[in-house]
Image (cartoon, rainbow, N blue to C red; front, side, top):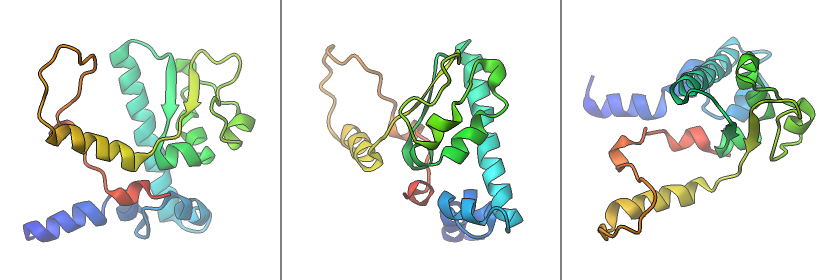
Length: 164
């Protein structure tokens, strides 16, 4: 396999698209899940991986105060948020399904130990800021109060994964 073919496969044929054998658009997969077992499998695996990451990060942080859903899928898919949170009640995560269905900014129950937020983001602007920081020379001043990871430390996602 050539490097070009490998890059094409990783960039455009993996992830949700690879598992569903159809699309990386979560909206389409949700529509198809009842009649297409590959779409259902892609959704299940996506939610499982997110749930697994939440559990691992909660352990690493020794607890969880707030869980944030953001980005195209996190902001716009109540079903996916619900599936991700299902089974995490032992961590204090409780979803108010009515608030979740309304895409409210806080979707946790009143008794939830963890606040669950839905926070809109402008992904294109965030990418532009990251690129801008990567290419502008460092000022070297002590005024910077935030840690900024080097661009190569960020995972690379296909833009198709986040289309709205």
